[in-house]
Image (tube, rainbow, N blue to C red; front, side, top):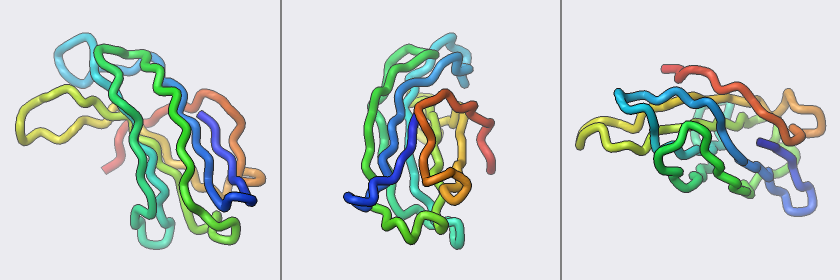
Length: 128
């Protein structure tokens, strides 16, 4: 993944490239992963913007290769965090919610120049 803020466009540019070594949630050996990218207010936890990759069928090492541009003024960067959730789209029943395979929360104020060069990031277990 990578993150950068474009001052000219007043957008946060997020690349979600791939995941690897995902642990399947159900009894099957594979899953149907997709990633959700959320821009969230640190003050009230309200979701300001949300995007989703496509689903990659039957994979524990999905290649997403998605590029998202989220509206964000430069002076507001310190008020937001970026949350990326990798979920399983496998149908586990009509009333079952999509299980979270891993997530990462990144407080934008902690990134030098609001930039994270392309790199692998470790997903953590879902937080309630």
